[in-house]
Length: 403
Image (tube, rainbow, N blue to C red; front, side, top):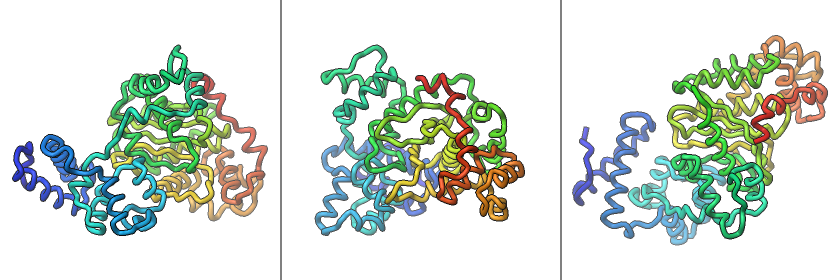
């Protein structure tokens, strides 16, 4: 196996590019030996390029747009290379980073050199902190995000930047800007999502005595055992403690206006995955499904290229849900109500409290979870209102919810 060394000459550079191409062809897992070699080589190549010809390579997104203009391509024409229509939009707007698989497809299909696609996109970080909506800044100030400082037109950008970096999470900020997955409506305020996620990470840093998370701890069996805690009188709090014992931090932070955020999985910390919930719907069934959905991201996607999943879980017309979200939905549903049990249960056909209670007892979970399943599957959200409406959750976290 070729030795990896600092790139000092054109010959070293050429050899590194050949080695990168060979590694890209096998598409290694990030935590494998080949994946680590690919990451290290990419870093060395970028360092050499920045020192040797910093202006010679175009920004990868601009290179894609230039190639589109040359070939008369529309964004929809990139779907075969980048995935869904929403994924194309996120790539072209700089909200999502190119993956190795995408780079390989673009190089082969559109002839864009890999060395161009490997280059970091140009990001003007200071511009990110400016021009935030006044209503969002007001809400952030009311929540104490800026301490005692008052927001003005002059200092708003400085305060926003201080908020992000004052929490000691600059690497996590990079992840939010470049490696985030948005299951959200086009009208959702992305600034609000980034501010919310940063606050969640800041809160997570204050949680003490959390053991290191052991990869693969969360699986279907783990989630099913966790679901059984829902029958406890203090189920949500017991669940939070159980997660903490297993190295997972649960944080509650209300959503902002112009978002419909239910929760997020923040997989940016090496030691501990963080799950943030908004409790936007004050219902126990929503709490448990959202928690399970984010845990599913931990089970399925921890250690992969996407490190932050924003989830607005309500049905949004026209929203193109990607495969990772569908996987998380399926695993969360199976953890709460196994398909094998649901298919043969009277609750699938009869939306009654008796049928819901019977299945809940059989599975060892709270009846509100079954009621939520009945309402969702039938599309009739007036079913079992008394069961779902009486199962509140926000009062468990009154201290966290008050910021």
